[in-house]
Length: 267
Image 1 (cartoon, rainbow, N blue to C red):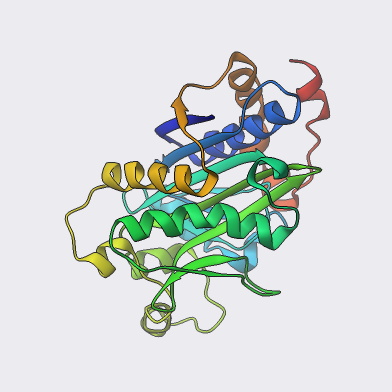
Image 2 (image 1 turned 180 degrees about the horizontal axis):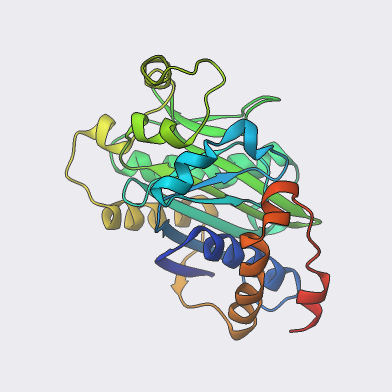
């Protein structure tokens, strides 16, 4: 059995702190394999660990509109997380539990939970292994509906990613920079041929809670397990509360340099 942390809504810094705290707890044997579902309020932009914020994000626009900016501990590209248009998942596990032993196989195994969930909703989705410039993702009719990123620590994995429920490309690229153009109309036209969402492919009145329930069912099928709803442990809560300062800090956001060794030892 796995632990399920049901949908919660937090700001960007808390969301990333919780994901890292769960991974640390799992590595220390203080938490089980975990599926966590969450949303972002306010809306946010997250950038991959290795990215340059000034190349990826319209920082001034984010500040003007109250959109959080956070650097993830995982790799991958910049992502706009809309407060009402996206459900985010994180999976923390060891490789043996999901019977996968390399990067692509771990991505494929975890992403199969999303593929199964979309299948339950009546959507045929495909796993795309990605390339040197793009992490593995999930597509519907060739358009991305879910992006994913990983942090690997020895035999342990944190993978988190998006499931796009609704999509406002003009809003998205108000906050993200596009490499192909500076004109918003051109950006939106090209992005519309790259991205899609559940509302577009199903034309349905499904809400976020419906998507969450289906996603849980999909991951249960992928991992051949059952989820037991629970909450974060005291260890995770205390560590997450300390890690929030890291994710808020300009030193982390602009340079990605921060040591958590002392934080982990203090708990």
